[in-house]
Image (cartoon, one colour):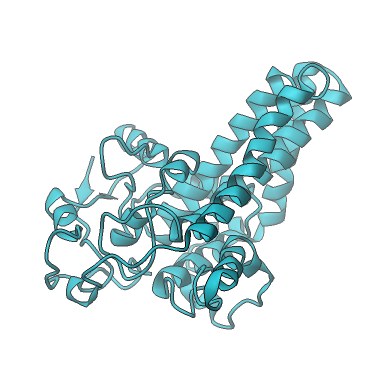
Length: 331
């Protein structure tokens, strides 16, 4: 596998804070934890109450299978491939990831990438589209910020220059077509589990059950986990690396979000294909990229060197970076 070193931060280390910022109030952390965990527990509990008449092994397979496929479409495709260009691959593979990510119903390819690049450019500043900060002081302000970062930002108007962030992707005819076909991918994300459920159970009940569990419930789960990276991972967790924002490594979403929850590591090394930088930090998205590289479907995979990781730690004095990331990679 071809590996490329990534500089430890998107900006010169000397300009970054030299001490970890403070934590959110305990009450705020508790409320955010409940808001995130209770719906997930409800979804986990539902199959036990519905087992035998509203939920079956087929439905479980469709829920987990479609979750894994569409979540990887977001984490590997939309995020690490298209936003940060952490690796390169064939055009047909890009279209597959564009389709899978679109099935997650989080917006079209270009819009998702544009918003995320804007987020990195303005991370946790007033211009960050989904920062949990800058919503006022006190507990109520912190809660308003958490709501905004989790889902409230969807109700804001798009910035007028939003698509300036994806001019590089718009040069590809294949990606322009994939982006334009977003409604088709969304429909297929519901039809595919419905067809599989119907064929396995040989009934219309199987069709509707497949749509509910492999489609609607799966969309809810992917939404909630992904949004939690925006909210919880900028409020709750630990910060082993210097970064110019409040990003945090969160164990819960490091696992549930297939590696995306190692968020402080990601903001310290934004172009890295690997977010879980310690051996124990599960990063399913990176495992897939590694497998792709082994079979020739990915190359130019970017990961930070051990030296870069060490320099980015809080225990190491900040020092100027002699090389800079390409402008497109820093977004």
